[in-house]
Picture 1 (tube, rainbow, N blue to C red):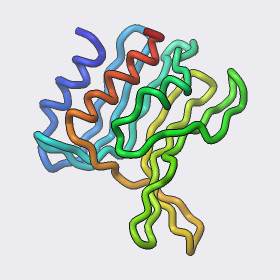
Picture 2 (picture 1 turned 45 degrees about the horizontal axis):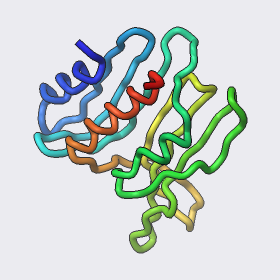
Picture 3 (picture 1 turned 45 degrees about the vertical axis):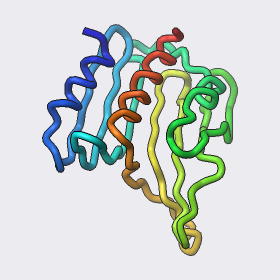
Length: 155
């Protein structure tokens, strides 16, 4: 069974209206999700983490992420990069502004071995950012998982 199918199977079995952690590995890839809540139609994603388990490199090209991840409601753009073995940060551009609340997705590709996706809210008054759950439909979450696994393998 493929990694995508294993994760999706666990999503289908996840108890509704509860926080849940989901994870699976296949070959050299491991994917972990933490959901604050889930239902048959949607979920609140706390974080997504994809890594190469044997110290190798993910085949993820940040430019491909920008090109492909157009369905999150906000476009991701490369904000900062530190070369091939460094860190690349992608963020929602522009961020979402609801009154005083500024929120955005942040994807970090670390040393080409790990990738994480988290949604943050930023308080301009205190200049602090804190993680917040990202509301996603199940279809969007499954597409995100599938795309990141495919990009991570370099296909």
